[in-house]
Figure 1 (cartoon, one colour):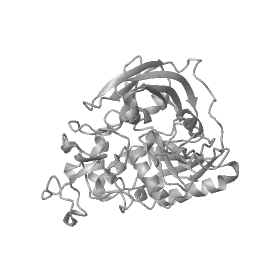
Figure 2: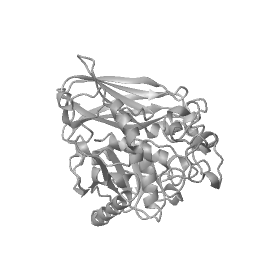
Figure 3: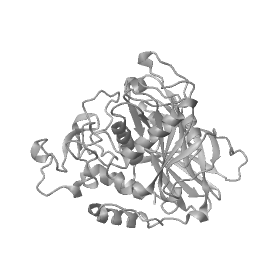
Figure 4: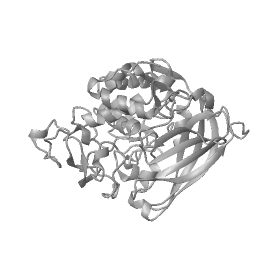
Length: 430
């Protein structure tokens, strides 16, 4: 097992965390092969209804997740999947995630029409028959409810083999075994065949920026960076407001949910086809444009642009979403969401609170003298507190710091609470 380096200030928290997390871990090689079972499905519905429709099962060549921590202790995400051995009912694997569909359910369009969104979940490939159960977190209670269950026999001849799109791969940063490191896989979007030198250079630039920021600087020897060279017919993404409609590798587009800067793709199957070429704990779509924008969805995918003056800052902000499930701390920018956080439910994100269950958040990081709510004055400029305004709402939702990378582009970096949350996730990839 590799050695991780992290700050002394976080040592006690992480030791306790991993002592608890390791209590019921299983022996990976007894239950799984070192490759992935990919589950393709659709999430469909409207504001109040969601349904799960299975599409395909397939084999992917890489399983990059940890072999020693298959059971998550983080309780993050709006969804989770559990894998249980059919015969013994032994819990083998758990994984939390979010979806673009769940975000769409909070926009006005969902009140009057239904839609279906592509979704992909990857689990380690089982050696014996397993039950795979999906859960969705009830927005009104914060509790998980069963959404769908399927039985998977690994010998089923209908499981698709050797079907992912093949593309050249460059390992930009090589720190060894994928099963003992965090693997971030960048896929090229809006780069033509003749622009792959630029793509690799752009990925290296973002990697250099990442390792200059805390807490990632402390983990720079524990992260692999991959670049998958997926060419597009033309440069740049689709931008409906500018009447630009480009045929690209994963069909990315600005103006998601009517927000010009929100850059996403609904072609999740294409995205994961490309990402399958490399180990990929985090899938990052790098879009070849100087326009401002991006997106990040926890354990789903992340998007950043290559050539905007703020590209590096947007890149790491979106990684906060996609890697650690951090919530947005801003509340003055235009968003499409309506009442995203019920004020009588504690959000699952570690950096925002409605104070319904604040003790489960960063209460242990407050000084006894810090008032709650905390005044947003110069006296508390560098103080972990409870500042009103966050999660797209000016009232009723609170954040831990006056300014943070999850709040603004002007912040100097992640606040102490966000750094701790990121460290906990990084440690789970040991």
